[in-house]
Length: 497
Image (cartoon, rainbow, N blue to C red):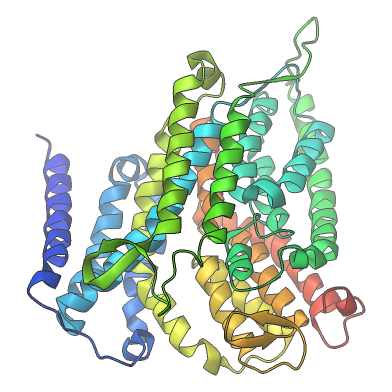
């Protein structure tokens, strides 16, 4: 056995042993941690080092040891998870370590990866066939379609549906990474702002009493951002397209021209089942909540419960994925270049991200209200900046709760906390949804789209390379958002307040 295989095996066994120990702790150790005080108040700032290490590994290691990274990214995720879990167990006790581990993995990561898996499997069986050349006009049309559907099937659903057609259309081009980058900007993030179905943060707001169609007031922001970014895309794409033609590359168009058609249409039924499962889960949340406010469902270690509505959601999603795979012809998957590689990569990396970001989210949850935020532009950038690197759903909740705690006299009821002004809620919502596009890990579909693109031969920017794209195109757009919509002197603030 090769040395690296032995090391990989040892790393995984160590992780398994730690997890087994944490699993058995409740049976003989029922206390730990300091009751009544938020964990984030007890954790030092340097406890986020494993999370920073995880991010730097994603950013740097693929550049210096690309082949090694491909075979060891899961081991890297495990190592950084252990760098957090073991010292945490020593400092706060194995009981507290086990509790935060199972909260993160069972209650957050598991529903997250099941949803991604379901959408990935189902969309892999939907194929757009026909003569589709990746010109600027065609790319613009595909991006527009993705933006339109993102708020209704979710940014992840829209991304999985549209990324393969846009890759296929641009297969003839040498320079095409920019198409995928703008796809992530617009379809995987910004397009999902109009309904709670579009992005997880908005769905959490819906569960806390924000009216379903309230987010439609973000339409002016969506239109403004889409127009700005699409104009930038057209200018850039036309410039690069001229270079393609100058180099003698031209779109491959079938003769006679093949009519556009969609095959694997039955998979749209499974896609609707997945979307319906998410909506149903939210509708059943109160049904699976006891009179004492505790969740009802499958008991887990440390007195945790996997809510019954989440169980129903995951069962329906997995059933839809299974039926899709079984009922879709093999040649359709082959036409899409479908493999399980991208979902394996995302699943491996995000288990490490979810575990190592526990301290960052805990600190944010405990101290978010003490940041002194009062103005919409502050909430926009605070929620956005953290959503660029952390899970944007809990970030949205932290700043939504912070805004509601300010005691607005009019606005939207935000759970049991209080009323948040419309301007602050719009700022939190836009920041969490839009700025998830700033990095590959800002929103779930970002990394998935990147993985699918690379699997199809597109040389995508590195972690920092992608951030350079966002600094050039997204940040100036968000600065304009701030000046036009979220400042006291903004001429269009009335549209979102």
